[in-house]
Length: 455
Image 1 (cartoon, helix red, strand yellow):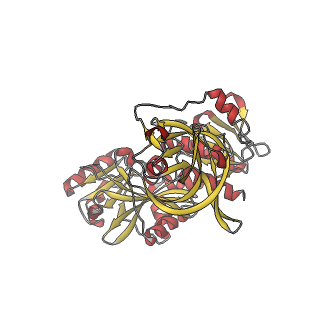
Image 2 (tube, one colour; image 1 turned 135 degrees about the horizontal axis):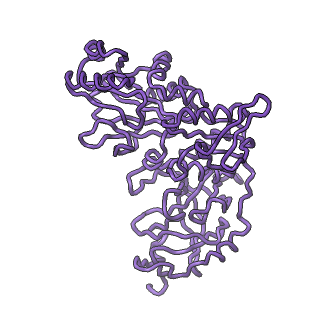
């Protein structure tokens, strides 16, 4: 029996003739029950009165231009639990796997594996009775060269026929920015990273322009995705307004971003839309400190700088004396502050709902580090999947609409009075929410642009 079995290393190259995939690198994992293949644009359909599914794959890791359009019989849709505990509904297909000179039918699930090291995971159900695994070895059945891969996939280069999209941001190496660029390119669009500090503009009634380093004119974009850091809100929004003047579609408008950065004004807008927030006070004179503290229910309370971001400039004052000291210290620096009731029962947790084009596409619970009350991921908070209630979804959608944001990170806290809105972020980070939920949030942002152009 042993001599009839194929011996594999921990990594091998295999092929799927029925899917038109000549070779793909797989992680051979006997610890995983189910096999999985990287797939995007997954859509079920009916063919000859049977259930089928069509999908696209990028078979070569770190190559988003090479794409194969596949279709296969749909055999099931089941819940798969990942090693991190994430549960996901996946389509299951059956197709032929070829390794070396041996071919046999296997079942595998379809899922987005962009965040994984391999486009293919070969699980034990597909190997049972046919394979022996030597985990110390790799590529026992051979490995294609870069030239061979190019030749095998020479007809699979997808011509760019989509939109010309600019990502207006500061750091091209930031996870969120890299993912948005990848998602756009994966969907066939021409993506350009535009560094805010290297853009400048010509204000003219007849020929307004935006220039880039070296004098390049940026007037031929279909859409812009503004991802503006708080420290350059003024200039970033000025550039966004200039793109709007050139009739370029901006995923978030300059007006919406500007008002989202003004914490006081944004809270007033949210309250005008009937959205509940923790009781909040605002004053200009240090003489009103005592009454300001009473207004929000006394200590402990939260003191927030209006200009603070990512949890910075947010202080928990546990006693009245501490609150007076913090408020008066900020006031002596002429800083604008909000004073807000402390929701003790939240226990250092909040909910981040990611809203795109009027829908909550993903949600996580953020939990503060021990001894910390701020749950921001940037401050060491952890993210986990959470099922948000219909009321929390309504609040998130209503908040994004009130702020006129097509893309928003809406932070909600659970209190004894029900869900309360904390803040609305116009440039929410993707790393925490994509990592925890395994959802292609960046892709949803690109889809929102496509929807505007009716693609």
